Every structure is written in C-alpha cells, then in structure tokens.
Length: 237
Length: 383
Picture 1 (cartoon, rainbow over the protein chains, first blue to last red):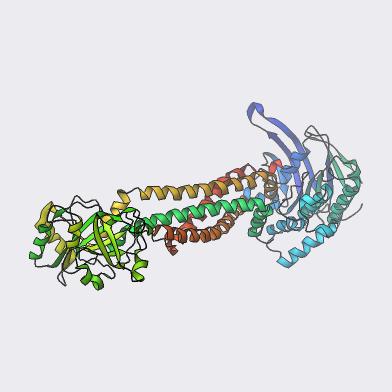
Picture 2 (cartoon, each protein chain N blue to C red):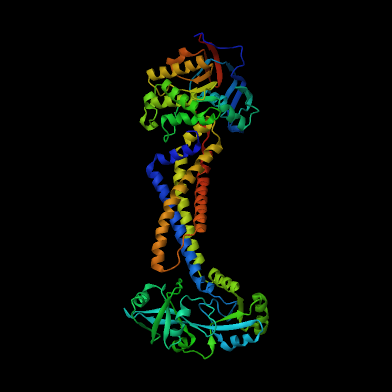
C-alpha cells in the first residue's frame, strides 16, 4: 500500500493537544484528552476503539460541526479555534461527509440527491456537474438505479448514493462514520475500495471511524482510542 | 438540480396527496378572501350607486339623517328659500319612501324604495326618465328599476312584449310606463321612480316635508364657497354638502354605521387564517419529518439561509398553485352571486392583486412559523 502519501506536505488535518468536554460546571464531562495527530494528503486513517471512546466527537470537531474549546485544530488550512460560522461552512464544503445514517432526501432520486450537493459548487458548470454525478453513480455501481428514489433502493445502495454525494464535490478530506456498518461484506468491501481509489487518484485524505475488522487492511494508519485518549499509534504498514 | 426552486418543487410534489391538500387549502383561502371582499365591495358600490348618480352641485339633508336612504324629513320651504341666494340657480326636492309592492303575477308583497322627484331640472341621473317624463306626469304612473330583484315580477319582460303592467303599491294601482337601470343594495330590493305629485298620492304625509334637496348652482360658482355661505344662512337646520362630500358622507355611514365592514372583513380574515393553518401544517410536517436530512444538508455545507429559502420557496409555489384555481372558482361564484343577488360583483384588477398579495403574505407567514422548527436541525447530532 505504498501509494502517494506526501508526509512532507502541509497536513490536511492537524490536531494538537485537542481536548473537549460537554456541559458546564459540575456537570462538565470531559470526552477528549490531549489528542494529537495529523492526516496528510492521500492518507487513509482509521479511528477505532470501543463506543464512548470519543471517536465520533473527533469526527464532529474535525468536520467543523462543533466548536473547538481547547487545543489546536487546523483543517484544510483553516484554524478552527478562531474560525467563525461562515469559515466553518466554507471549510465544510470542501469535506466529504459519509454518515452512518445515509439521510438521503426521500423526495429526490438518487441522481438528484447527488446533484444537489453540486449546488455547493457553483463554480462548476452545469454540464460538468451532470457528468460528474453520472460518473460517480456509475462508480458506486448504481448505473441502472440513477432515477430511483431512496425508498426503492436497498440499504447498501442508499449508502452508496450517500457516498457518491460525499465525493461528487471532489473533497480533499473525507470524514466517514462507520460507512460499512450497514453493508454486507461484499458491498462494504466495494465502498472501502472506492474510498481507497479516491485517496490514490485525487490525493484526498480519509479519516474513518470504524469497528469493522474487514476494512482495517486499507488503512495507512490506525488510531486506537480509549476513554478519550489515543491509546497507541499503530502503524499498519 | 442547479437551483433550490427545483428542490422545493420536488419536495412539494413528491407526495401528490400532500400537494393537493396544501393547494386546496390555498384555493379555499383565495376563494373566501375574494368572495368576501367581493361582497364587501358590492355592498359599498351598490349603496353608493345612487349618491353617485346625483348631478347636483350641492345636496341638502336633514342634520338628523344618518344616510340619505333612511332620511329624516325637513320642511320644503327651507329648500325653497335657497334660490334667493345669488349663487343658486335651481333646487329640486326629492321624496323617499318604502312602499309595499304587490307582485301582480304571484300576489306576493315586497318592500320597494320609492323616489318622488320634484319639479324643475332633474338632478338625479336616472336613465330613461327624461324620455318617459310625459307619461310620468299622468296620475299613478311610475318608472321601474329593471335591476330590482326578480321577486317583483317580470315587469321588464312584460313591457318588452308590449303588455300593460299595472301593479299595486301601498294599495293603489300604479301603471309602469317604462324601465330604468339603477341597481339594488343589501338593504333595498327594488326601486320605483315617480313624480312628486304621484309620490304624495302613495305616501300621505305632513304637507311640505321632503327627504332630500338638490341644488344647482350658477355657472362659475365654487361649490365649497357657496356651501359655506348657505350654511351661514341656514344655520344648523340643514346639512348642506357638496357632491363629493355627500358621497364621502354616505361612505362614512357604511364604514361606521353598518356592520358590513366587520362581517365581510371577518370573513376575509377567516379565509386568510384557514389558508395559513393548512399551509403551516403541511410545511411544518415537511420540515419536521426531514429534520435529520436537513441537518445533513447543513453538515455538508448548506447554510441556514438556503434551508429557509427552500421553505419560503415551497410556500410561494403553494401560493401560486392555489391562487390560479382559487381565482377561477371565485370568478364563477361572482357570476352566480351577481345573478342571484343583482349586486354589482366585479372582479377588479385591484382586488385580484390585493388578494394575490394577501395569499403570498399568508404563505410566507406560514413558512416563517414552520421554519422555527429548522433551528432544531443540529448537524452535530448527525454522526
């Protein structure tokens, strides 16, 4: 798995001494302690660990969905500690999100669900945007299902539509939360290979939370979490 | 899928049933608003129709009359004093009374408003009066308003066929010589025009008392100036108004003295409210059932404004979808209502635009209420 990870370049995600807690005062519950790691272009990093260990919280922080309170966090060149809401939204547009729940819009066909994400990229022409949508849906194996509504698709197919939606904007960073959890081993494998291809072809970085042992082998690095701390960095290479 | 309008339309049209219900809600609202406002305007237009037919320069009423249609009588001699003033060219006394008209076809009795027009220049514009004036001078001959309600009998049709129409008004036989076209109001079902002499045969009253006086001024006399001088002459015994003031006086009575504003205004408000509730319900359901999806959209970089716009656009689509059939339906109701009530029901451009504005306002208002739910969509809860 010696593909093009460029560890000399600027890291896409730079986390230093990040801490996070919910609540205030006596009810304050600290979730993350002194988290430090980097994700470089083209790198696939897995976050594993038991539930409640803080993996998802890291994902929401890196995704700019929660406000950073302590520590340093820079994503795609934006310092999240000093970023305002508009900065966060702008950065989020360059991130591909893959959620555990696909959350497709039931009133839009597979094609429209993916195409809608292209509204966030007005700089791309209508023609190119249409081509990209078709290309991605073909890539996730939904060539014959493009005009189906989510209700008519299987769980795996819906998840693949959601992945196409996350990737259509050619994000430099993909954040994925258990993308294979709802899939059978075959579809799960396909999804992971797809993400891998993205990392290789476009130099995108991928940060993925997973419990799924079947996908561990695609990782360049696995970060294992326990009780809000990084247990030990394991080099998958 | 390049625009949020398309997304808005797809969300609305995904469930045809919901779209139909929401549109029906707007249709009902538009229909109610247009019809209620139509009746309100018909009530005004019809009640002001006769005042607007006054061609006199000044109008004289008793200060006790709330409206010309329910007048308090005053002495004719007070009106006949006025030509002594150099500005006054002519005066005409008008008598008004509610008579009982016996329909000669089915023998039913109806109330009819009877005008007695004094001698001199006729300063009430009544089409056909001048042509029939020779006949009307004969004893017990009258001019009938063909736009009276049909309960008075097919008078106009019979006259057209050349038949003689004798009716009974206040137990006295009256021959209808011809027909005119004036129109009815909410309170007046029909009109009959007589000379003052014939009028007084039907309505015995204190000699020399009249209901309305009309004044023709000499040319190049300013009505307002003349009014001021005449008011100084008469003191508080008479109310003297210019023509414009007379119309304003009648309108003021309708605004304050009659409940029409309240009744039809309430009807319009109910229409607005029904539309608001239905559109709100539909949009609220749409927003709340799609909260996780909307939160996802927020997470991937759509702004709050985009989602707000989406909901507003949906409400605007509903406004337009419901407005068009609602207007068409209202037009049908107007035709039927005009035929049944003989009231002037006109679908004016002004009313169409006002109701379009109200409909849009109603839908945006619904959207604004439904949107408050959007804030509950927190993208951090998605993972």
